[in-house]
Length: 112
Image (cartoon, rainbow, N blue to C red; front, top):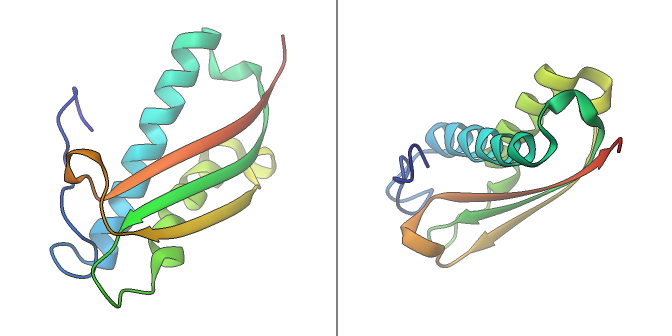
């Protein structure tokens, strides 16, 4: 989403390529971090990324959800370095709200 409007819509493996899905995962992760910053006031309070859950709007037979979710993992590594290493789940789903391509959920360990 960008300014509340979905940027990447459709099914990965049908409407979108793996590369576009990768970019969608990066954008979804940036949106999660923006939400965290709005609550914390700063991303400096994040001690580490604990877990990433990724849901990929997948075409029938599409099995490369992990490659799509590498977009989220790679971005978190670039931003947080070693603190960005995390456990991850990548799941293919038949539908997502607003026909978005990727939904990301982050679990973060934060300082008070």
